[in-house]
Amino acid sequence: MTPIAELLNPESNSALYTATVLNYYLDLPDTPLRASIQDQRVAQRLFETGVPLSVVEAALLLASLRRLCRPADVPPLPRVRSLAYFQPVIEELQANPIPEGYLGYLRLKLATSWTMPIRLKSKNLRFQRIANR
View 1 (tube, helix red, strand yellow):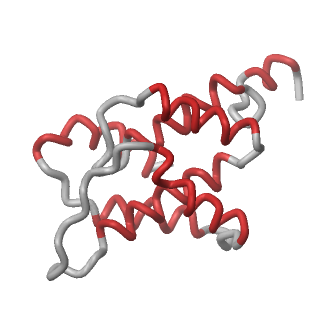
View 2 (cartoon, rainbow, N blue to C red; view 1 turned 120 degrees about the vertical axis):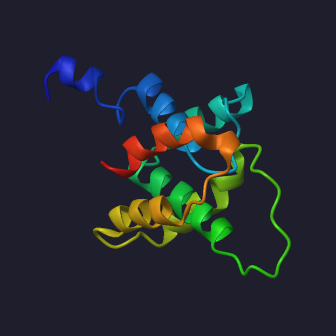
């Protein structure tokens, strides 16, 4: 890889990796509109420990789908307030990697499952760009 390409690769550039993780997080339903300092630290720690972006994205999508696809007769869960909420799912996927193509399935499933409240309308535009990759 050329030095310029290396700088533009989120897997090897801390700032790009952190920004990508935070974008994935903020584009999900029931997450804050902005990342906190604590969220930035969690994203930085994920980079430092070498967690691949695909694992982080899959964990965020999977956890969000688990939240959205709960039975209708149970009380709703409170909003997610921290990126750290997803850490157990990240660890789960590191221990049990997802099959090839499953990330695309998760993107599609979340895009079709998410019934968006009016308040989150601006977040939907950013989410659609991620879901259509």
